[in-house]
Image (cartoon, rainbow, N blue to C red; front, side):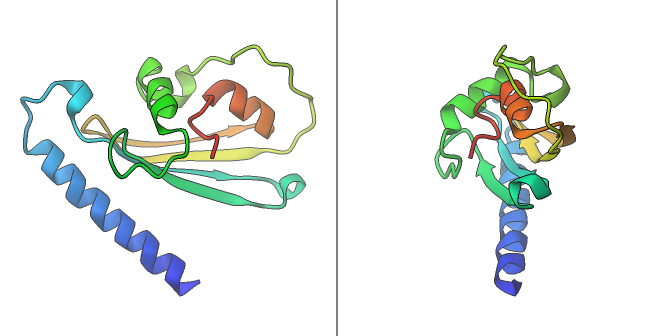
Length: 133
């Protein structure tokens, strides 16, 4: 467990260092400013209380398995979880909440969002590839 904590702390330190270099060049276009986001999903008892996390940079060093599509999804909603529209898929009505978190920097701007969806199907319908890891 302490190894996970050390890795998480190291990740946060590197994110802040990355964000500092991204802010040093304010003349860069918004699409090229630094993006470094920690994405996590906490599933309910129904899904085994799983916690999943990844790092999205929209560039080299991306740990997200569908990084390019996740970045496109974020760009279409301007990194606002509330603005993401469902894709129209049919989901069941069972209640197994999934809490998603997005923390870090999107194109140089700080982001800290938390949203709870009623189940993983609804979460994926709204967020697409963003939390599909």
